[in-house]
Image (cartoon, rainbow, N blue to C red; front, side):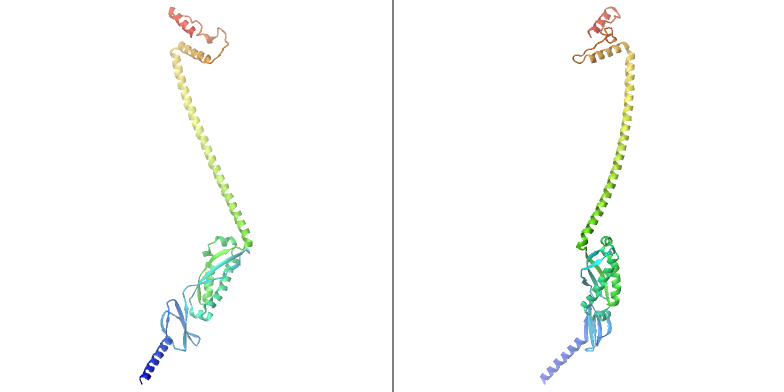
Length: 306
């Protein structure tokens, strides 16, 4: 009896545990779920928490709703001018409609990736096909992917029940057969820009140099004008002083000028002058007529000695 009772209790507990495990289920915060009855969806988008289902007849499929990453295959695309570029990209996607996601992929993440990747490839091919190479290189990659991301997001929500949150370009390369030509064209463009900048710099330098020369000429002219003015004023003042001194004693002034002439004429070695004896140059070397007796004689003697 005791053994039978124990077996009954154990069996009852096992049945309760089985019933509880097949009746109660928990949806995690990072998940969403759908409830199925013999494969048909009977409850959509079940939120996180503890829920109840009918054992055996109903099953629950849970899906990860966190942001997932799809690394796409490196692809070769043609630009508007039919030049090839090698693009490496990745996609951020997320399950937003569990029911549609289950119907389209049976809840298989690999199936979803196989359906998303061709769509991404087609969208990028169309985007690169409408741009030329210069625009692809010059534009920011984030701005370049806005259009494909929005277009693909609207499409995938309807088809797969997933949202395309972002498409990012990891690398854009040129094929080896066109890299050299593109780099040569870029180098030529940079050299042309450098020549333009040099020409502008030379033009600016010539303009600055011309302005400096003009200012120099103006300053020199002003300085010369000032110098001539000061020289004229000095000469006028010297002439006034000279005239005033000459007026005080004309005879002495003439004598002094003659002495300076003698000194300058005979200052060097071997100086020789050929003049008439009665030349005015020797007026003060000849005996001067005395103006008053002995004093005049002394004066004449002094002049002769000088």
